[in-house]
Image (cartoon, rainbow, N blue to C red; front, side, top):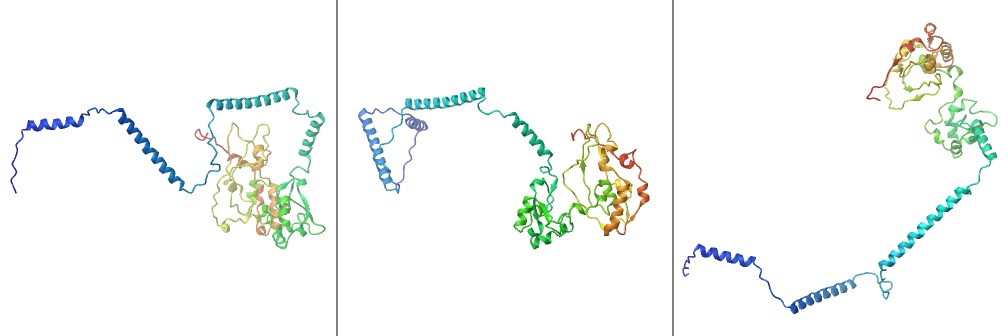
Length: 377
C-alpha cells in the first residue's frame, strides 16, 4: 500500500476557506426567472389540482350513498343581502303591529270595563253568607272521625256503611279491639257506622285500609277511657303511672292578650334517645309517687321580662287532689295492673299550692329563667 504524503496547510488558509464556505451558505443570490416560466409553473400546479379533484370524485362515486332525489334540480341560489334585510324588516314590523293591536284592545277593555261583568250585590252577599255557613255548619267542620282509622273529618265527608257486611273474615279478626266497644261498632240492629272514603275503598276490596296499615286497627277507641282519666295534666299522669319510661320536651308561648291561653302545645322536634331500664325495679307499689321525686324529672325554664304566673302554666303543671284520687280509685278497681297498689292519701293531703291555683308551690319554686347567649342569638 503506497504511503500517503502529508500536506501541510497554514492555519490562515484553513480559516479563510471556512469563512468563504460560510459566506456562500448564508448568502442568497437573487435568481432571475422569466414570466413565461412563472406562467408554466402555475398552469402545472392548476393541472395537478384538477387531476386530484377528479380522482376524489371517482372515489366518491363508489361509496354507498343514496342518490339525490332530484339530480336535475339546480342548486338553490342564495338570496341577496338586500332581499334578506327587507324580509327581516317586514317580519319585525308585523310582530310589533300585532303587539300594538293587542295592547290597544286591552287598554280599551280596561277603560270601558268590558272585560268582565260586574258581580251583582246580591251574589256578593250570598257568597259571604255561604262562606260563613260553611265555617259554622257542623257538616263541614272536622268534628267527626272514621271508626276504623280514627282520623278527623267533616260529617259530610263520611259515608255510612254496615260494617259487618263490609268486613271479610280476616278484617273481622283485625278489628277485634274495636269490636269490644258497642258504641263504635254496634252489634245489634243494622250496624251503620261512619267511614271515610279511603277506608271504605279498602274494605270493599277486602284489604286493610292504608291509614290502618301501621297499627293494624289495634288502636282501641275513645270510649275505653273513663272520665276519671280523660283530662289529666302531664304531671298528674306521671304521679299515677306505674312507671314512666319516656319523657318529652314542649314549648309554649304566653301571650299578653291571652295570658291563660295555653291549650295548644308546640312540641320541639328532634332525636330521642331511649335508655333501657329494669322495669321490675322501677314499678311502684304505692301511688301517687312523691311529688318531690316526680318534679326532679321536670325542668321548667322561661325567658322574658316577667316570670309566668300560676294561671299561665296551670294547663301543664296543675296537680288536682280530687282528680288524682279519683283516677287511682278507678284504676284500682278496673285495671288488673293496679290491684296490688296502695293509695297514699297522706301524700295527696300534703300537697301545697300557690295561692288559689292548682299548681304546687314546689313546681313554681324550681322554675328557672334562661336567656339565650349572644352566640345562640
